[in-house]
Image (cartoon, rainbow, N blue to C red; front, side, top):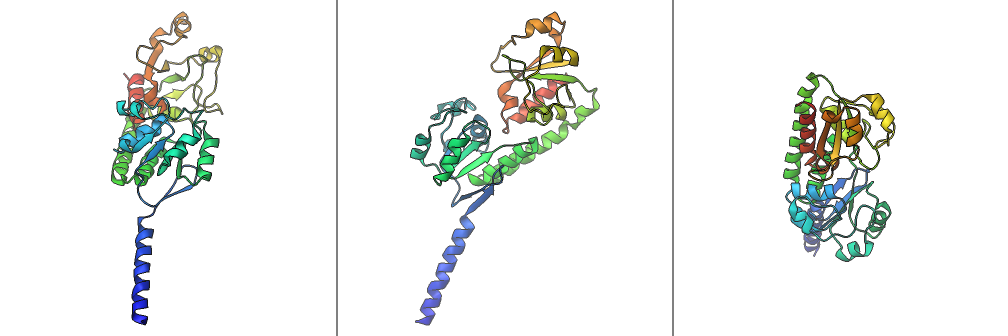
Length: 284
């Protein structure tokens, strides 16, 4: 009887050990631990760049719902949308009951996301504060969806390509005004990811020293800065900035450069292409 009892207990321990081994634990960008019993098979992505990351990892088919502007690759636009960066249907997410929710910490839905967490749903909060952390997120999310090897490979490529941009620093540094919005003149500081991209390209950001990550600047301050280039984030092909007349009046028309906004403003793997495009614009 004792022998049978020992055998039974041993089996229980083996099962528990197997369960513990299968458990996935990852710390997100805000330091919270995300725990899954197995790789996520159903995922709700609450930001376009997170949807892109899922497709980059080869797991786009697991995204069962997302938000507005999730339009890359083309298949992403076919996924049901539950709202946008500022309005999200809590009930719809709960009804889906996904294995994992990928959320952008500063994306505007923080209160709803916290409510989802309180209901016991697994939430990974993304908030890359550096270009390096984009690579780290590829690794972490790759683990959560069972694509660890792909995540590690993409992260390595991201880091290597960034490192190879150092050659740009040998060229004469260019003073750049990055225009991130068209209605008002908004720019970025050096701490912003786009500001870091400018630095990676060997450029001087004329508003880099400002304390606010996305400051609104005046026309007068841009004129005073005398940038060599004005790089405009373009929301669509053929876009022309409403400030073009001002730049022409100043004789700066030849300083204007356009870059696809989706490439340079979405902190996923595709931002690597945006950074390379930015460098090419400044060193052609």
